[in-house]
Image 1 (cartoon, rainbow, N blue to C red):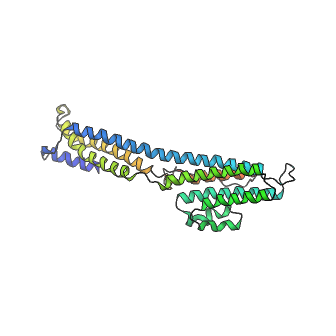
Image 2 (image 1 turned 90 degrees about the horizontal axis):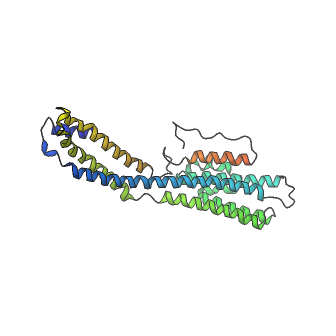
Image 3 (image 1 turned 120 degrees about the vertical axis):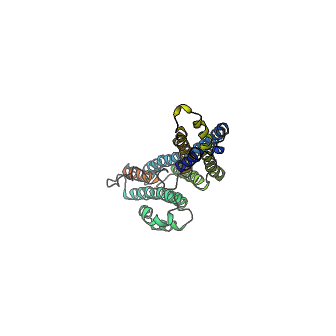
Length: 298
């Protein structure tokens, strides 16, 4: 698009000799500087949103390991002999698998895929049939955290969890709630539309004016030969393309939870968490890591 437009300007200025098209280069250069600052700010702010989202999912990974470690260490029968009996193993597996359900439910919740994939992506980790209906709620991952809290209270009542250990595990649940809330803040607060809209408008205005300012500059370069005016076309096209690409990069980084190729690879992270936690439970039949699709992890 830029090349065709710039070639049209060059054809009108050169062969058709329509010289009233040219404008002074100084205002175009000033506009280009302003646009560069504007789209640079947008790209930087967009990347900050992406990087915060990635940091939050890194915190989810760490909290997941902390939760599993506390489940294995804290949930014990009253006559604990430093081994695992069937009651402990059942409780450990239920709590850890429900956490795996929470991780995947959070991924689906952020991608707005809860209704379609709940049965295949989350239900297999819910060992308590009473949890299966949570997929019909407005916020399934939040409900799963509540269910974890109820389970901790029941374990405390059954004597498998001391009061101090229950409080410590409840703090981990609080951390998970904080991670989810921060992710929802990014998801539900779009990038300000004035920046998203006007950055595109400013880039297009600059791209329209750029060949009008460059054509006279190249016309004055007599040493370049009789066809020097046409050199404006590749240079103007290159500069316009660079500005447009920077603007598009910022636009594609605005929402890091849309399941696009440049977003946070939540599917791969969820699988990595599943492998780690199931290994901590002593399981040996583990799923494989999520492979990249066309060199992209989702």
